[in-house]
Structure formats: structure tokens, C-alpha cells
Amino acid sequence: MEAHGDRNWLRGDPAWWGMQRTHNVPVIRNSEMYFPSGMATPTFEHRFGWARQRMRPLAWPILKPVAWSPFFLISSIFPLIFTGRTPDDQIVSGVLFIISWILLIVPVSNARNAQPTSSDAFIILPIDWILLAIGGVLFLAHIFYSLMLGWAAYAVFWIAFIRSIKMISEVFSIPPARIILPIHRSSWDSGKLSDDWQVYSEIWNRGKIASAPMGEGEMVLYGFSRANMDYISLSYICKFGFVQDCLFEGHKFSGDIMRVIGGLQFISPNTEWPIGLIVSDEEE
Image 1 (cartoon, one colour):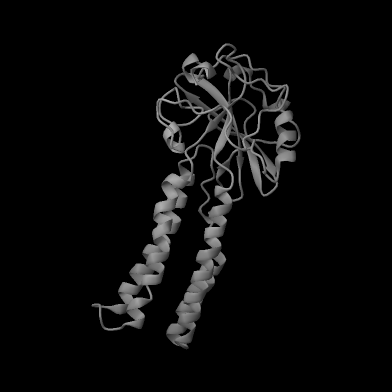
Image 2: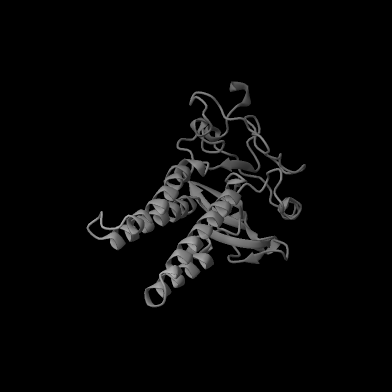
């Protein structure tokens, strides 16, 4: 989900937004918020501070398969209405039904898992698992009691599908991004974090270092390395486990997020960004 190559690693691949690859992505895009005052950000001349790293927009890996999903869900009912036109109507119907949900669930899961620092909990994906389970129970019940329960199950599956699409749309409402700071690993001390944070590691390491509950999701501090440099990232993880830009207009938890970010200003940005990662705005 990250842009390949140093030049676009932070700002993102221009092709993601329909730009020519020779163009530079602006340092601030529509609805993105600037960093709080007093929080250092890098420039081509002064390469210290926090920087936003944009990730690949979710529309790329998700929209096409999800758009095909309702076609297969609708098609799954045809063998049961126009019977006798397939080798086994129920098997064909079942296969089409399973394909429809695979096209919905698998791309969403893969897109989330490709995001660094995202959650890998399958059950919190933006899928209406409860209605899906109710539909499954009704489907099994129709075998023993009444065929009408089968049609009720189909209706419930459609409601679950529509509600799942709405959940996915909610994830789409805020683009994926995190903010990153290069550090010397020896300088990190989790003991300086406020009481908002649950600490998993007192020292810097690769992986989850600390998290803070935030509305329906959480803020996560995460350590990682790239090209012999060590970094710490701050991400907002929504209730569905996706990374969302924590500095974005309209975020319903912006007030709390800004408060938590403000508490991180004790971190001294004493490590320079590699010059290859910082794009000169004069080139734009």
C-alpha cells in the first residue's frame, strides 16, 4: 500500500490520483490538515520532524471486485427460479452465492492487511457478520421446515450485503495515511508518554510500541526500519481495523486526536530525514 521508490514514499504515487508520474503530489491535498503549530515538519532545507505518509487509496484494490459482487448475488437465485437448466441447480446457486461474498470480503481483507500498522482481526472487517449469520440460520432452517424460510434468508443476505457496503463506504470516507518521525532508537523512552497510552514496550522496537483508545478506534505508535533508518509512526486505526489519516478535516475524533498528538511534542526531532525522501516544493 506504499509508493515504491524514495521520491514518492511519503507523498504517494502520482498515478494514484490520476497525475503524471513526473509530477509531484502536493504536500497538502484536499481536506488534509496541517500539523499542529509547534510540531516540526521536514522541508528540503531543514530535514527534521514529522511527515505524513500517504498510502494507496482503497478504491484501487477494492472497487472492481466489489462492483461484481452483487451480480453474482443476484445470479445465485436464477438456478432456483429457472430450475432444470444446470447439472445441479442447488450447487450452482451455492457456488454463485459464495463467489459473491468472496468478491466482497477477500479484497477488503487483503487491502486492510496490506496497510502497515493495521489490525489483522478478521471479525472486525466492515461486514455485517450478525445478519450474515442470521441469514445462514434461516437458510439451514428452510431445509427442515419451510421453503419460505429460504426466501427470507435470501432477503436477509441482501440486507447484510447493503449494510456491509455502507460500512465499507465509511472506511472510504477518510483516506489512509500515517505520520512518521525518524529517530535514534536509543533516544526513545515510552515512560514519557501520558497516561492515555497503554505501553507495550518501554524502549523502541519494531512493532507495536503503545496504543491509546480513541473514540471507536485507537491511536497506535509503531516502530519500523527502512534502508538502515529507524522510524516511529503514529496511526489512527478505525473500528474496522483500517489505517485512516489522523489529520483530516471532518474526522469525528479530531479534537481528541489533536490532544494526543500535542502530547507527543516532547519527542525531539533530532534525526534528519534522508534527502532522497524529501521532495523539494520548488520542483512542483
